[in-house]
Structures are given as structure tokens and as C-alpha cells.
Length: 117
Length: 336
Image (cartoon, rainbow over all chains, first blue to last red; front, side, top):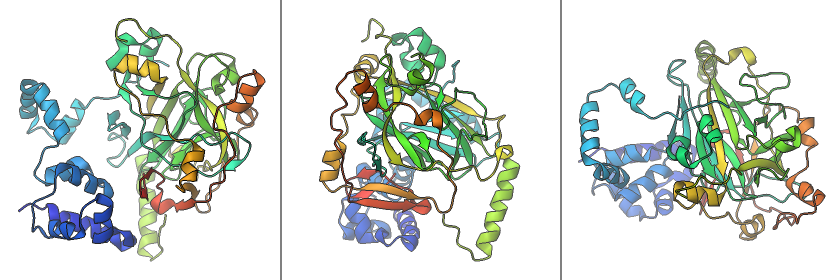
């Protein structure tokens, strides 16, 4: 049991307070799944959907797709591909950084360099 | 600092305030007719791809390497608009060819109030072009440097920089906290706040030129110059490559050309209008207002004007406001 379904339902219901188009039926239609399936997902009666559906659902709800995919207990395909390309390097990097505080991780993020212009 | 994520520039200023973050992206769009009429806002058709310039430095001219920043591909005569997303107040300056898109003045890093040479976020959700009149802009349209179309060439007589430049300054933390307290007080009182891989490519590059006219207000700064933390700004130079250069340099294909405004409209798809409440707009720039548009310049030099420039009527205009400033069209729903 993951928190995926209840989280989706909580976000969708908050959005629906301001916009009635966030009903189960209409969200399901826009994401391309059956309303009954979305309802089951929200109640945790079925496993989280595929990565592609999860990403569409995240975008529909205005959430970060990476966070939603992780909440669904998965690692996105593009991240898997990045790791597979240089497995030793990325495995070591992730292990080294696993306990690092957020500020330290942010320093590893690559900045867009500003030059002379 | 600025990082790139999913073809967006993500700016953050943790040294100023933990909430001082904003996103800036460049949206592909229709080129509106350049026929003297004022058109509503065209849709967003997805982000332009962005890459770190440094990753392709050896395939780019030396002068480009000094700029840093990012690269993006544009088809000739393709249009773009800039999408801002921020909950924290920012002052953002935008220039093309190092000419300010709001005043027509030469680039300086700092902010100026008279005339105002920056947009204020989050009040300003988008910027589609050059501010030529109060409430009217001329669309950003990509043209090759060296043919006299770009704003830079028309105002300086030189084709040196091209591309697009921006700098963002967050609101000072103290002022932000005060503003937040004021807003919380309003909410508490029950008032609803609505709110090639071998030889380097040719040096020719793309610049931006004034296209068709569009209804869009650049909002006056309601706070004043003192609230902006000009000790902490982040700049970015966006170098524009034509599609051939892009494929040569990056080895990837750019997005296909967007549909024409006529084809898009004929399918009954929506245009947009933004309602920013009672916010005042800055006056347009006389300098920018006097410039020749792409079609006017083409005629002046005896070239065929851009194709697909027939006047159109946009019958389906969606009015959007502060609470849901979305104008990207992806199938059934408009969003950004």
C-alpha cells in the first residue's frame, strides 16, 4: 500500500473546490483513463498506474512528475537510462550523496553559467 | 542561481529568501499577422528546447563562448513568448540584441524606473514582444542577423549580439515579509485575494525583430524601485540558432514549424485575452514604436513579405485572469 492514491485524491479534491472540472470523470478523461480506474487508484484498490499515466496525472494536477512517479514506487525511465549509461559513476554519486543535506545537494546542481556580455 | 530543468530556467535566491524562486520558459507560438491590426494573445505550443552553451562550446564561435548561458533553436520568422511563473515578487528585464524590450534603450544590468525597463512578477505572467504603445506590443519574431530586420540592427546599425538576454532581481526579504503580512491580514478580514561536428558553423545567428501587433499590457511597478534586491540578480544570455545550425551543433532535430495562424484559427482553436484587474500599464516606447516591423522592412528592401500574413479573425478568444493565467493549447485544454 502506497500513499499514492490518497495523495492524488487529496490534490484533486482541493483543485475541485475552485474548479469543478477536477471531478473524477473529467480528470480521468483528460488523462486518458476510465473514471472507474481513477476512482480505484484514489482508493488504493489497485496499484499505481504506469509511469506514463502517472506523469500525465501529475501534469494534470499541477504536481511534479518526478515526485509523483516516486510516490508510485517507481524510478522514471529517463533516470534509469541515465544511470544505465554510466552505472558505476552514478551509483557512486548517489551513495555519496544519500545523507547529504538539501543545501549540499543543491550545490551539486549545475548552474547556467553567466559570461561576459 | 539559475539551473535548467525540463527546458525551463529555474531561478532561486536562497541567500535572499527561501521562497525567492521563479521559472522562466520560452514558448513556441503562432506568428500573428503583421498587418496593423491588434490581435489577441496566441497560444503556447510547448517550450523551445534549451541546452547549456558550454556543452557545445567547441562547435560555436569564440565570441559566443564568452556569453555563457543557453542555446535555443528557432525557425526563420518563428515567434516566441516568455512565460513567467513565480509566487515571489521579481523584477525581470528582458532584452533582445541587448536592447530593452520595454524601453528600446541599450542594455544595462540595473533597473530603471523612469521609464520603467522591467516587468514585475507575478503580476506580469507573460511577455510576447516589444512594448510599442500602452497596452500594445509587437511580437518577438526570429530573423537572421545581418539583414536589418532585428531591433538591434534598426536601433544601433550593427548586428553584434542577437539572441535574448534577461536578468531577474528578487524583492528584498524584509519587504516580502511585510507584503505577505499585509496579504494575510486581508485574507483574515474575509476579503478574497484573487488574484556539424567538425567545422564550426557560420557566424550568422538569429536575432529578434518586431512582428505583428498584439494586445498586451506591461504592468507598472506597484512597489517602487527600492523594494528590489539589486545586489542579488541572475542573468542569462539565450543565444538563438537557426534550425540548420541547431542540428549541426547539437545533433538533434528542433521542433517542427508551428502551424500558421490561419490554419490554427480555422480549426476553431482558442486565442487568449488576459485580464489583469485594475493594474496600470506602462506607456509604450517611442523608440520601439517607430521601428519597421518584419513585413514593413521586407517591403522596404524589396523582399517578399513573410508568407501566411493574411488578416484573420479570431472568433474563439478565452479570457483568462490572475487566478488561472494559462494559455498553452495541448489538445482539449488550455494550460501552461
